[in-house]
Image (cartoon, rainbow, N blue to C red; front, side):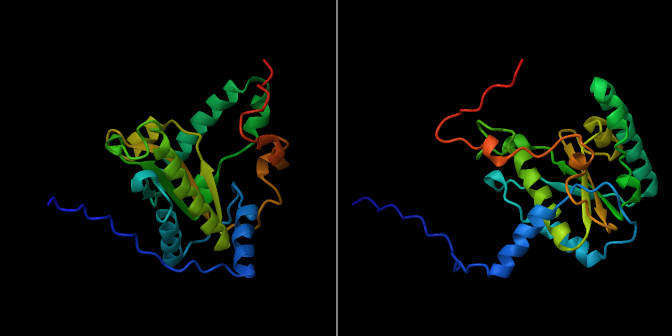
Length: 232
């Protein structure tokens, strides 16, 4: 008689203990009070706190469990200056591309790279094409997975009473070269992290009248796409 196939073993499970009301409130508070900070108060982040934050980031979900995130802690003042210079170069290019909003955009300073207690560069490593699980038709899921790690970090930062800003205004090839990244590595963000004097009452770009949060109802559809196409 042929051998019977061995059924796959059931995954190990733990009891689904519900959060208390206070624990749920804390999670939602971190979500709603998280801010993309641009103003920092110097100071330091204790090593044990920074390690907690990075562990929170590292526990993010990732497609195919590929974990496509790498963190570079920028401790050199000279490197910070060089990164800031790259940001300023791209800030000017972005302002020119915005046309009539150029002057408004140039008022939005990006000083966190110089002022924050910590600067972390998040990058995806080379060799990501080897991960097929979950990416065969959606290869950009490596970016989505790395973004989950950044969001985990952001929420943990807020829970620790610190602030974080995600800077994406830079030439990725220039930043990769500056930080000696191998071919195929791709930087996604410069994260400025540290103590802040206060949090913005609402997102800074909303306070500056640059944009506002759209209502959820405008982005929620049933069964099929019903949103009207943007005006030409």
